[in-house]
Image 1: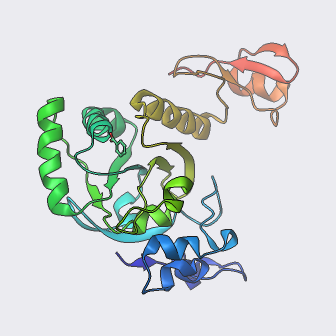
Image 2: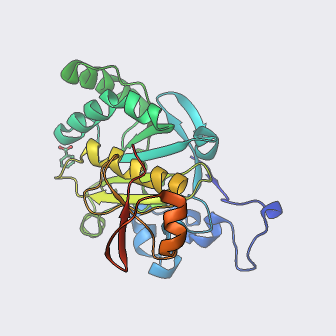
Length: 264
Ligand code: BEZ
């Protein structure tokens, strides 16, 4: 994998901007295992993958089950979910990938490209996908990144601290279960982090994508447990008179808690 600077000079760099590999010197300290380089790198030098940060989601080039990719080119003008797995042929990961594979049409409907990552190489991914398809009676069609050396896992901070400090005999930390939702501007819009012991929930991943996309299009926020069709919240930045003009009916529970409905 080759790391790519997240911005080019023509994109109006902040004066403090430095290419990603310079910002993160663990990447540039060859000779020691990546995990140890990471541990030797101060917290201030490690990635800051903040929601909505002005810098885009870090780019990278990687080998996947669908060939070599440049991550930003892969996303193109769509949304993307990048989700990671600790290892091939492990039970929880196998159930998760089968479930994600079955949701392909739901993600497509929302204009979202799916890409998985697992910390093994391509030959192992290939035979694991056959197992996943057999077990879940599906046909997994999205690419899975081969991240045996954890380069993408470190770049996206998909590492458990305890595992990092108890590095296995190969000097490599396990990858955790992260989900990154990235928008067409390559902004990280949502992250979820689960430990290796807990499988994710595909319905929740779809629900948060629905919330983000509804918020972008309609200019609203969504309450606890919201699903499409439920009432949404008028943001505090919109006064009630403007909200009535924009949305029609407003249900005011408190001056700061006003609901409306924007349909599915
Ligand atoms: C699993 O997918 O079952 C798993 C992977 C790594 C550690 C523990 C569990």
